[in-house]
Length: 156
Length: 198
Image (tube, each protein chain N blue to C red):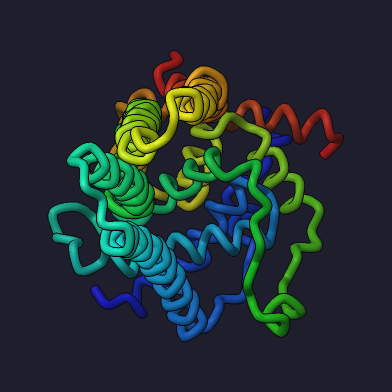
């Protein structure tokens, strides 16, 4: 698979995963870009033994987790100014709330629910995270309940 | 329950962002590569300069004693080890497989930090030992030309300085490094435990 193709079809998905993880628009863009740099470097090594989606989501999730190491560092964005001006902050409060609530979950739950909402199959999610499918199902159920609860408390 | 069911998937997928041009990613990648290369070159220049400086001393002052020569070699070795470890920290030591499962990745991260902890401590001690013994050996030739009083004085001052480094600076540095790594390790472990929780 060509990088251009991967980049085109996965950019939004990876961005959303990062956004759900950090709930910070610029930081999420940075982490997403970093992820694609890793994908770029690793792509020649990709053998079709696993699904490309699984492979990409593993890299992205692992890169998000790597933020634990960097959290205290100030991350400087080096996106060009013109790009920053046209950034599209979501106006719909529901979207903002959902991402906010997700980013408040424990780290691995953030990743699991993001993958679920990205409509990744649960068997694949199990394969990305490294836990059983049953466990994934249970966790997703609990996370959704938690989110629902948060929305309710918020009067939605 | 069904009535107030929020369609998370639909909301989730409405979040959009402009896709940066692919060239931009390329630029970022190049910048990243250049920075790494710069770091590598810089530390190697330092290494070569150190060795050059020692060779210069060797020729200029023509040490007679074997102890002086061994001393010089030990000091250079100390610095070289330090720089090599420093170089390595930026390359393969920090590499872990990005494509493994999250659970395995977290375990690798924990292992990596534990390994770093060990290397940092050992290397720092080794560095101090080599540097200190190198200096003491190096001094011998020159102090042997002094009167007993000044020789003892010179060694006294040097050993005090070495002692201060060994008993104060070294443990303090190690403690600081360890605390940082321990915190990371416990964070990674805590995150990994989230997965095992039923």
